[in-house]
Image 1 (cartoon, rainbow, N blue to C red):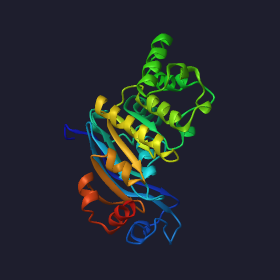
Image 2: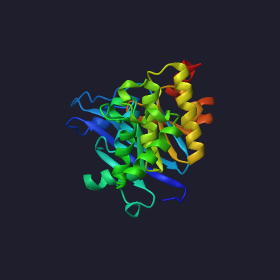
Image 3: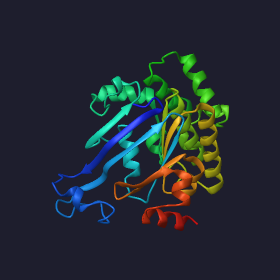
Length: 278
């Protein structure tokens, strides 16, 4: 792997259904569907390939059902990819990590990745305190000293602009914007080199969206962490992403520098997305 590349993804696919020899031919952007008419299999992702460099924010944009959320869920091992390869620089001798046992995947995820979900119910336990949610991620990295755990949780919550008194509050008693900030604090807990963000501003008020996006941008500049940001909102992608992938019907139809993709889109679907955002 190139020394600048942190994560390399090649030929990643995810199918729901039995699959047949014609799935790839009968689905995709040219066919206008990701459902195979012959066997009914949903081809959520088909042959997705890209690299993420150190300190880079990669944007993934597309409409609902394009496969963008499935992509980050497969990288984070929330879902099992049907086929493909994911390589993390320096991990497992740069070999494919998708073939690791489940226990090894959990350890690797705990050390190398953080995830912020669209719905905080997926990323947070609402029946334990904000501090305890952050502590869960620290425990995954084998940090068991209570004092150090609490100090680290307090530090992260403060960094994400959560008032100190909220460390012992349950997330369900807080606003949606606060819940997303707690998710961000949890994702950063073990200083992972890669953060995955899946539609993190959806459902938030416009003013709250702006503050969350400013926080993400500030933390990324400060920590130089790599990020994959999934969104249907071209404004979010324009604000955050250095490079962008455009997905439709499970496939990447265009990719490149964000300014280039948004100012001079080559694919008709990208052109439609850009025009609809104007």
